[in-house]
Length: 362
Image (cartoon, rainbow, N blue to C red; front, top):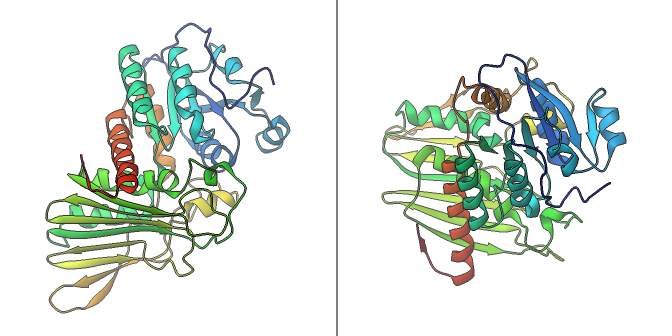
């Protein structure tokens, strides 16, 4: 490689802006072909109407060649940013270089999608938002779990007011992975709060906006753990309280969502199936895509009667379809920078709460 794929660069390309009048596909470069790039971004970009995965920057060109015949590879981010044909750069590299690489792409005049977390530091996230605004460039964060089947179902229940006034929401990502893996997500500086926390927090921001405060606790529970593998946070919305939990040593992850209101409760077990479908090689949007095999349960507050509450199918392909429309001037950014910045502010406040043992106001 001519330079480190996981490092920032000083771009030399002239600024490129997407022309909303153009009719051809948006040409996309994917930076990184690890788990996120291979499992999520590449197949979803290729499935999106109006998009073309034109280039992948990777240290494993042979793997990309086998998986994505006909897609060009690059050895460095510098090479990608010097290509005038690339309009959108998707950052799917380790979290620690998200801010540096996204900043380099913006300085090169490219539209940018950043995998979550937006950045590791709030100041870096703010700088990216300011830079994109100053240059009039598209900037978005890949928050695919806004399109989880269970979250879409919960959002619909709330919009239909079937639960009454919501007083408590519990959202959990609990897994049983008791053995520490040798990967950057579990290295010092990583952990579940910055890995799964962005999903948990983002979903609540979509539903309820910014909380007034956060109280957060982090712990390392596994033998040999180098970063927090348990996170528990309470978001204060006044009468509404939101409890978030992420853990790596729970063998019975039965609670995914529980929402309680003055009229009823809504309970959901099991995780969205789209990640497993992508891992299996299923084509996004194929028959059966995103269909939840375990519908939620609706519990009447007066009688205690329980009934199945089927919801819509999950729809990860919706994210990049919306990005393509936005870049052509035909729709809105599906995860705009101001929302991404709110998520970062809450994550940062959560770390401060865990460090000091205090509730942090927002």
